[in-house]
Image (cartoon, rainbow, N blue to C red; front, side):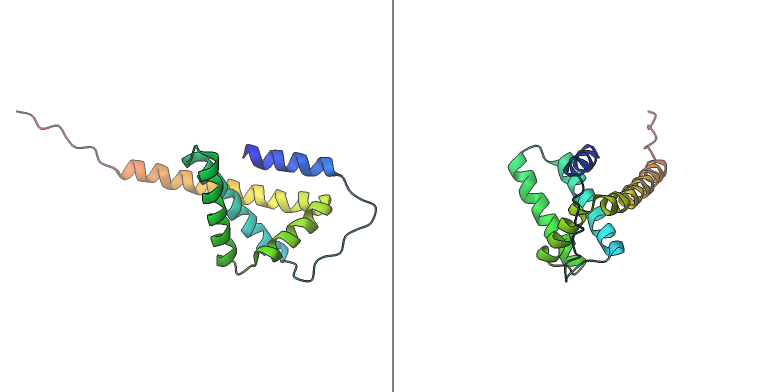
Amino acid sequence: MKRLFYLLFCISLIGCGEKKPQKPANFIPEEKMIRILADVHTAEARVERALTYPDTALMTFNHYQKEILNQHEVSEEQFRSTYRYYLENIAEMDRLYEVIIDTLSIRESRAQVRADSAVKNVTLPVEQQP
């Protein structure tokens, strides 16, 4: 989550230009981009939590990102050009990330509920008395 907020902070520093960039020809629809970015941030968090070596983490994250793009049937160039468009349109990027943050919060809540119910369903062995 720290990286997400750092990314948003950096984006806000870029500022808005006077001319509004055009959407690329291969623009990914907003709803699909939200799902992709939520998946990318989830993968990033998993890699960050599991791996301590930066090189290994980067390779693992790149692998996950390719899998996510394939799953959503999006090319890397399509993803990058759409992301670049959002970087140049801060207001739209802010709106997009509001939904992404809500999506990630819901995913986190669901994961917590599953984890809590898994813990409740585990039965501890009863000590045998001699």
